[in-house]
Length: 149
Image 1 (spheres, rainbow, N blue to C red):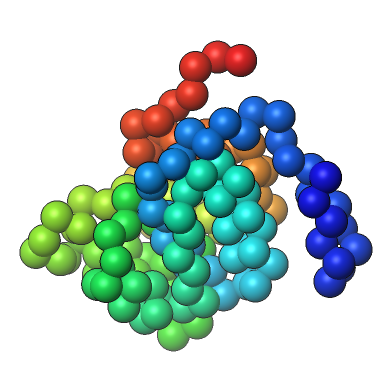
Image 2 (tube, rainbow, N blue to C red):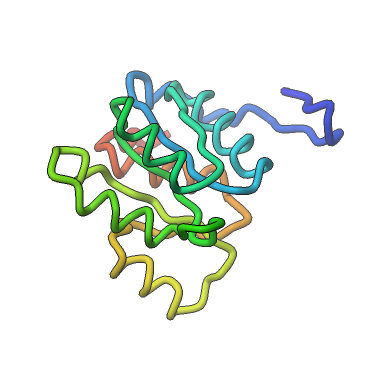
């Protein structure tokens, strides 16, 4: 059990955590510190290296400076939203233009999901984050779907 003293919540290490993401770098872009922390902890528990950004501009700078295998990005960000971030990634002229992008949002209307997919996101995950689904989607996007338990 991992205790998080700041909020008194408890996060259990999921028994399915197998280090399936060892060697993978995930860029998480979200303006909510709790989401950044939760996604980072869960992805690191599964072996990933996690880069965190609280806005699109910072995420694009990290993408410029680091190898990134997959991005987890919120739809509603300050200044440049998630669709703007995804479009900037897709306009790149290097191999990073093809990095898979998992969109996350509490806005689960069909219109928002369609906007995300049309904007360059590969998959969509509703908030609040289901950590099992987050891990499954990231594993799928990088070709590391674990064998059945």
